[in-house]
Image (tube, rainbow, N blue to C red; front, side, top):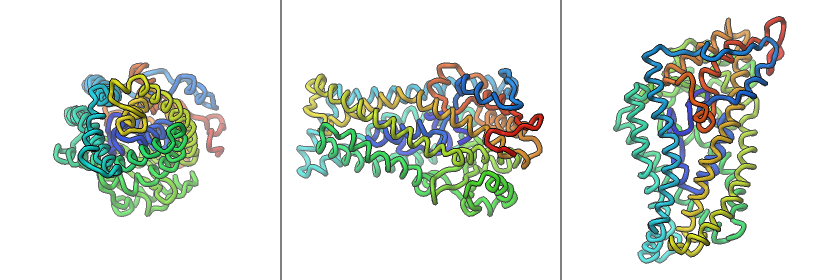
Length: 464
């Protein structure tokens, strides 16, 4: 996406399965999201300065002085600063609390106790596993609910969210239902894999995770998104915009026909702006929020769309999945060894006799959750690079379609920043850890000074 500032902010679409540590496969999907974030993106952050300088080295590029292209009025700036502090707290607290909660399940022997309880109550081993993992998923979900509630409360307080509490609770319930429906059999299956191959289970899990990552990208727009938002054909509500979008489609060569362009009824839940391309293969589609269509000029929507098409034309999804596959290989390998060591040294205190037990899998989830938290900055750095490339592609793609690509791009970034109350100058550590897009200020400054066509030059991706 061109927006959705950071992974844990919970903006726009409810993420699936929703909580990082709720299922073994969630770690693989999390890693895919971190490294392929530009393809499915859910966050924003500053690009590394060296990368920005390299990208500004083309013809007509100029150094962009900070604070020039994106600003907020004093009253909105004060709100943005306060809201940024809340978002930062929720982002870090969510990841750390998830790790602490899993550790508490082990430290208090609650995980082992529930496993023994299911063994006494039920004879069939598979049913014991279903009950254990069902209770585990519900417990993890409920543990994260207070932070989710506070995030929604803050979003409503600052006018970002307009979603009623009844609707919000409905979305939370749907998210829990999906988590249980998918996470329970997956955990049961992976637990069986660990028992079947106690020394090489991580390799089998890695092989299984690869198609699951691709399937998640394919299924998201077809099955998951419609559960949380309503969609209708864009041609029905705004045929003029469809015609203009087709100009960008024709120029970029991306194959998305009008019948796969949709309007999402985001206004029932948010005042934020967004548009994105999602899916893969036959599930690929354009989605424009109804808060965006009609609220900002069509020229700016074209830039947002052109940015999104850049992810596909530049093969960011494929690259992200390949990077994810390599990263997950080493993560699973290392975490399998660390989890086994942890059970050997702490298993007696936790009443766990083997990593292959159901409570032992909780120890593995703990190690994987720690790894997922620690690798987030690395994944975000990759995503920032992809997002910056897409910004360049988007601005070049609308050259010749809109009168002034620079002005259009800057105006689009300012509209997005103000709609989401994005702070102009985020802290360096927050940028490093949380942001997977360049900040709005960084992106607007670059757009304002990127003019490769000056003096007869040409763009990086479009030679004409």
